[in-house]
Length: 162
Image (cartoon, rainbow, N blue to C red):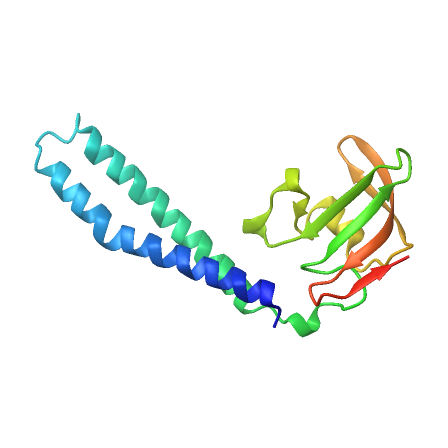
């Protein structure tokens, strides 16, 4: 299995452990201490701790889901010679000749401003399965864009160029 995936799984496990510790031990203690101060309606510490508790619960759920998806990922099923999950793809805009790099990540890792997107985005759907030299059209709210794939680096570390 890819080291990148194993490293990400370990990051998720570490973050989950910290959040579970906070959720099970630290937050209940803060809530109990805040309750001792009396009237809960105007108790800012109590409300802040309860709000944090809700956030931590949601984050634990989100990270657990990401970890489950990564654990079930079959790296052998990911293409070694074309765009798939974990690939870094360089494309050239056919109109502006701008060079753009996309990396296909899981939902929780998506940062579009850094080029980290999922395969379920319009760009991801258009580029999935493509090889260097392929031309793709992407329909986005701003209109239709055309790109030529120049380089693909797969999750396996294979680099394929035109």
